[in-house]
Length: 121
Image 1 (cartoon, rainbow, N blue to C red):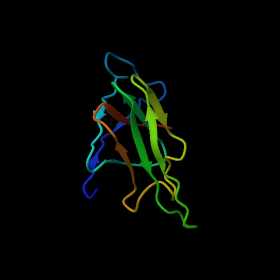
Image 2: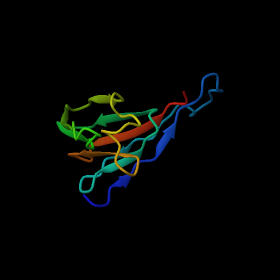
Image 3: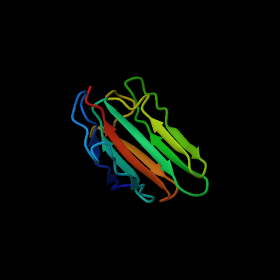
Image 4: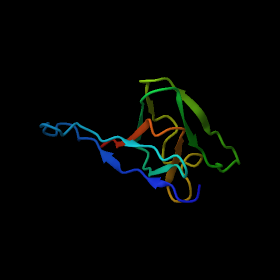
């Protein structure tokens, strides 16, 4: 897994922003099977995951923190049609982001689609 695909982080609207047609729509992309996907983090991101058909999985890799601890979220199972939201732990702290300031995810099928939303707060 040398060259992961970079997921484009999408910005959520700020409070009191004007809402028009399409301004609340977010784009999902199929996860990358071979090398995984990464996204940059500031501590305000939410990872949205949708599964198409069949049972599939997503893995979120952690990094060793300053105490040498590592706590991957391994093969989180998604049934057909499931939707999941990951935000706890996906912060700008050691233990999740890598040295490039990114979080790495891997999916078991292109049926698993991903979107990363950065909150304005």
